[in-house]
Image (cartoon, rainbow, N blue to C red; front, side, top):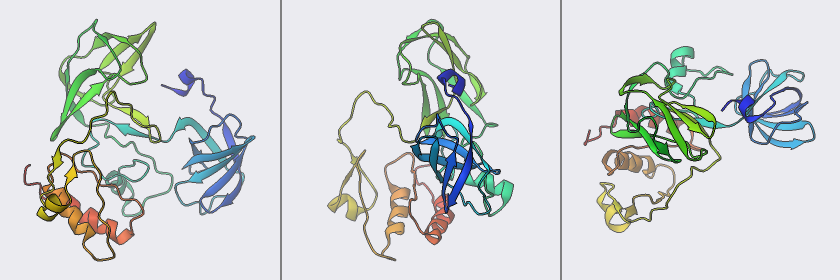
Length: 290
C-alpha cells in the first residue's frame, strides 16, 4: 500500500548534528521509530532509532563523511523492508538487500554512497501457473499460483494482512515480470492488485498458522556430526572455535553435502577477508544433487 493509502504524512526534516554514523535531525514531527529516511544531499539510507518531540536520532547505514548540518532529511513513511519473491535465490545481497553483483556492474569494486537498487530483478520473466479462478473466495495464506525457480517452487499467496477475499481477476498461465499484476482481489468494497513479490518489514515476524515440531534428521553428509551431534530439520546448531580451526571449511562441507534444497549464508560481524574468501568459493561449490 502507498503512504497515501496508509494515511502517512511524509515530510522533510533538516540535519542539526552529526556524530559518526549517527545524525540528529529537527522538524521530524510525525515521524516514527524504525522509519526509513533518506539523509543528506546524497540521500543516504538511515533508520530512526529515537524520537524526542520533533527531533529524531537517526542511524545511517553508510559513511557520513562530507555531510553537513542543514542538509535535508526526507521521510519515506515506511519501515526497513525486504523484497520477497522470485529472483531472490542465487544473489549476493548486503544488509539493506541491495544486489552487490548488480552494483559492481554499475560502480566497479567500490560501492558509491546513496546508491539504491531493488533486490529482485525487474527485467526477468517467470512462468506463472494460476491455481484459482474468478469468483473463488480465499483466506490469508491461500495459494493463488506457483512460480518455479531452480530447485524450489514459489507459492504466491494471499497477504496475511487481508481478511477473507474474493478473486476478481487472475491472469492465464504464462510468463510475466514481477511488476506485472497477476491477480486482483476484493476485500469488502476495496480491490487489491497482487504481484509475484511483496515487501515485508524486517523486524516483523512472518505469521504462521501452525508450528511444526522437529521430527526429521538433517543429514549433513559429515559422519562425525551426524553420529555424535545430529541436527534436526528446522533446528539450530553452532560451530564454536578459534581462528584457523576450520569453521568455514565445515560450513563449506555442510553446504555442499547437506540434505537441503537451498543454502542461505548470512554473514554478521565477519572480518572482511573471511567474507571475501567465502564469496569467492561459495558460488563455485558443486552441488552433487543438481
